[in-house]
Image (cartoon, rainbow, N blue to C red):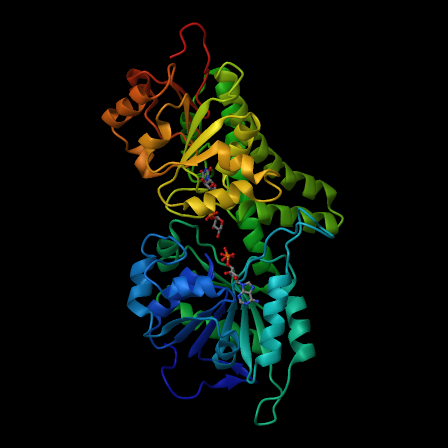
Length: 495
Ligand code: UDX
Ligand code: ADP
């Protein structure tokens, strides 16, 4: 167990028992992760800081800035006890034995590596901040997903700027890599019972001491056998590799979905048959309109850039293909909508159900719905969007972002945010399911009948997630297309 009170002991300047944690970055990763640490370690003071005062105010309110099942309960239990949200970054850094760096690392949009490399300026700014305000030795933990060897740059910055403690001893910093493997929508469950906790450190006495101190924090609720200590670079690369392998499975099944549609095979049956092989397994084989989220695309692009920088062109091409297949999946689906609606959707009303990149999250980063809406808009359709969690503001922000669109006013004229499934579908010619929300999956026959009644005829339904009962919907009267289930158009009797 970690020490509860009293001064933390240390090995050559490395805190060995963590009593105070600072998390820089109150986003989708830092917020839930450190809230769970606070819950499971009541003897540790956890302060989550952010430069964004609006975000911090939300964390301190009844409406948290991140929607995650179970998160409200966790925060309610420990906020004000040993969990604090603050904009006072410097004070939290000074007080902490251990600092998680959980800031965003988006794909660069300009300069060298544009479109591929990770933008590390938030990581660097946090590192410099730590170096300039720390008055005691600390363990610095990379939580954000970063390119391999980022820890080396952090170390250089910290060592070049470190000062002396009040007692005249030089402050030392030990850097660890501790990537977060939580998935959005199941973050709390994943944090409560992780498959593994990975801690990478330098192979030195201090490095190992720091890794043990962090391990001790997790061991308050995670079995020691699940905490895996590795070298720093292996840990950094493992996060990119795990996401690349998961995304690769989705692109693989989506490529097979295209073959299914062309041949009459059913992708769910194919995935199930393949997944029964214990070597393959059944996870991440659900065909879809395409994967989204803040991680998969970003991390693979990162891997592509890394491989290319290392002169490994074939490796880089190999991973790039996973992204290209994802883009192809989204475009193929959008084209199917247009071709099925008699090759034009101009001035037609299209209902989009679901805008989040997956169910049980309000996050829209890289959501397939953004790409589809852009495509439908370019075809001059009117779009009504309904999502149970994503706010109107967020949807409009995503659809009017520079780079997505150049005419924000036109978007506002073409897009309407609906308040329910029924509201979105009224008078529409086609319904497009973009997110696998339970509300859509579990809608009853009566609900679909009411929706069908209010739509133009023929009424089309395109299931980008393979969640609806196609047989039942065809009985209702819909003309249904589901990803990976073909053939679709068998004229003259389609359904
Ligand atoms: C992912 C990783 O799963 C997680 O370990 C890592 O820490 C962060 O990146 P996340 O992006 O939150 O998590 O969600 P995930 O469940 O992996 O889904 C990503 C995308 O793939 C979603 O758009 C989802 O709908 C899609 N997906 C997932 C499929 O299309 N088919 C599947 O079989 C699984
Ligand atoms: P992730 O999904 O990786 O958690 P988010 O974008 O949700 O990414 O959250 C990252 C958070 O980090 C943002 O709220 C941002 O304001 C914060 N942040 C970025 N740079 C700094 C910094 N130098 N100091 C404090 N917070 C920062």
